[in-house]
Length: 267
Image 1: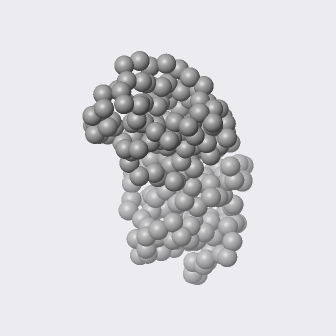
Image 2: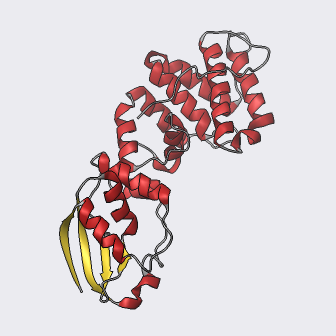
Image 3: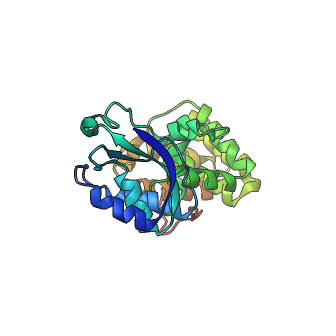
C-alpha cells in the first residue's frame, strides 16, 4: 500500500470516478457543500483523501472527486493505492461522526466562540435558511462579530438554560440587535437579564414588554422549535419585542412583524 500527495484536476477526478463501482449512494448535498468549500479556497490537505483497492476500484473519496468535478478546480489531496479489496466495509465504519463544534475545536478555531452553545446561534445568524455552515463560514462570521457581539455569545455560554427561553433563535436575535446597534449593548444585556431571571422594574418604560415576551415564550415556546420556518418566526417576534424594549415602549400584545427588523447576515 502506498500513499502520495497529488494534484487532482477535474479531468483526473472524472476519470477516477469511472472506477467507482462499489461505493455507497452519493449524497448530493455533501457534494455541493464540498464544492463550495473548494471554490472558496477552504480546501485543506488532510489524511482523508482518495483510496483505490489492489483491483483498482475506488474505495474512498467519491464525494471529494465529484466535488472537484463540480467546482472545476484542481486541489491537492493524499491518494492511497493498493488497499485490500475487502477494506470497503470498515472504511469510516468505526468512526464517531464529528459535529461542527468538534471540527472547529480540533482546528483550533474555538478561542472565543464558546462552541458548546454557540454553533446553533451561528446557524441562525445567516440569511440562507437551511444552509449547512462550514468551518470557513464560522470563521468568516466570527471575524464580522464586534466585541459587543462577543459579549452576548459569552453571556449565552454562561447563563442558566431555561426551556423555550435560552434558545439559539432568541440569542441570535439579540446578537443581530447588537450587530446592527453596537452602542446599545447595555440594552441587550438588560433584555437578556429580564428574559433569563424574570426580574424587571414595573415603573421603567419598556420593561413590561420584556416580561410579557418572556411569558409569551413560556406559554408558546415549544411551537417555535418545530422547524426552520417557526424558528424564523421566533426570531421575528423576539426582534419586535427587543425593538419596543429598546425604545422604552410597553406593548399590550406581542406581534409578528412581516419582515426582519434586524436582518440576518449574508455570507
